Image (cartoon, rainbow, N blue to C red; front, side):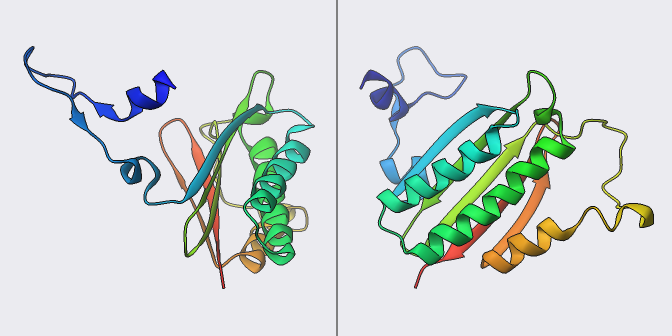
Length: 165
């Protein structure tokens, strides 16, 4: 409970000693979402199964339809598998993080990994690799309303959104 109270107070890095903390509204923490969850797991062979189960269980508890559950479960399975195969998250000691946010309009799921195994490696799929790679993005696009990805210096984030009826 104390941690929740601490989240509601924000003190900038350089604050005069007599300044009062500025309160943050709850909606600021969640982006206006009505519910959300964050979960991190070790990047090993059981991680994909665990991520699928977390997404399905969370969305089922929130009362979403079987169609939403099935689409979210398949799409997150693809994102988590890619994180393990193509990033440092799949190596010994690796970690990936799952974010789920629900608001009135839809569900947003993101998988954050620890970036490329080899920082010098390209994202380009070589002609000889095309038969083995590349279908996952098509599956995610088919299961979701929107999807995308972006990189920071240390991480790769792949996400998708499913609009609610």
